[in-house]
Amino acid sequence: MKEVVDRWSSRRAFILAVTGAAVGLGNIWRFPYVAGENGGALFFLLYVFFVLAMGLPVMIAEIMIGRAGRRPPIQALAALAQERGRSAKWSWVAGFGLLTVFLVLSFYSVVSGWSIEYLSSTVQGKFAGASAENISHALDVFLANPWLVVLNHSLFMLLTMAVVAKGVSSGLERLNNWLMPLLYLLLVVLVIYAATTPGFGEALKWLFSPKFEELTPLVVVNALGHAFFTLAIGACALMAYGAYMPEDQSLVKAVVIVAVLDVLVAVLSGVAIFSVVFSHHLDPTSGPGLMFVALPIAFSAMPFGIPLLGAFFLLLLFATWTSSINLAEPMVASISTGRLSRPVAALIVGLCVWAAGLLPALSFSTLANVRPIAGMTFFDLVTSVPPDIFLPLGGLMIAWFAANVLDPEKAAGALGVGTSGFWLWLHITRYVAIPLVVLVLLSALVPKLI
Ligand code: PFF
Image 1: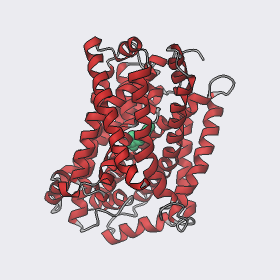
Image 2 (image 1 turned 135 degrees about the vertical axis):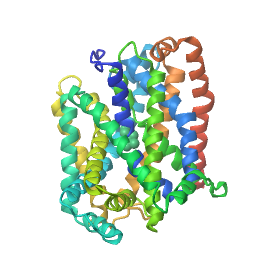
Image 3 (image 1 turned 45 degrees about the vertical axis):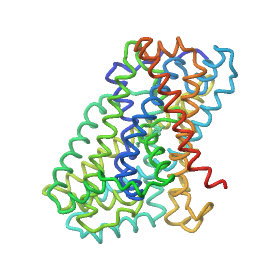
């Protein structure tokens, strides 16, 4: 397959697209509840460490491969490996990535669908003056309704595939420019409000003062998985975006900006949500419903809270949309080469992911008692195994490929920071990132195997 000629329209557009991929449910929905289940501050500390020590080098590796290959992931890995006289089977790494994005998108669409429902409930005034108890109850009632959950999941899949069918859209770029900063602003407003609530101090302590005695292999592996999930790495999704990167752009600068923004959004969201949790004596370990209960409670107690809550869900929906487009892109780009047109590829991918998404969608109602492994529902499985195990495993193989298989000259060219910068990246990747990922994965898996 020939190299792609598409490019992001500007350097800024590339940064926005990668930030759009990174910032999403992972920061605002997943971070608070997974931190809640893993003890708070220790998880946060490990997550930030993993973003720096492994996330950044792997993210660079992934985009670098896309930029050097200038093809969709499967074809890029095969071509780059063959150029070095290595097996085209390296493209299986991208195949594993596609399986991962497929599974992640299946639940991502379901939970984004919850945001559509919450936006509509807010507009209908259902949260105005509601008590904390009623708000908690409303989530259970909604999730128990299979039709409504599937309807919203379907709507979100349509929204995603409509954009991916057309290709990287300049319309989306422009929206990205405005809506993401607005979301950050709203989060800042929320944190300022949170600072006036009685639970604020406790929230800060919970998030920033670690209890090292609570360290377990599971906390470590969950933090690693979350770092990869929130940065959108390990599944070849950013590799697909790297293929369209302009020639004259600094990769390192883009990656650092994205990582800083990504951690910042998680911190803002965590502080806001845990302030509500502690002010209202909610349970921080209550799981995936945490954000959907805490935020309506917080906003409904604020001046102009209901319109702001509506704005929040709208912006959240936009943030999840830009991430789901990124999740779908590698699948659609990989199969829409040759005879299959992009719209048809998007239709096929969309239908398959939609069908797979029915399993997590129905896990709170029709399939609530179906627990295939370790007493976990389909929702529990798909929201934990692909992010916590598949992404680090995929990231490991991507980093290995970039550091050991990819032509060093080509890699250095794609990185674009000169020989000493390349040397630094190579050594951090080989001797810090790769061994650490192996160590963490083994520490989590080995006790389970014996
Ligand atoms: N980073 C996205 C989020 O935090 O919501 C999720 C994601 C996107 C994960 C793309 C993986 C991926 F390849």
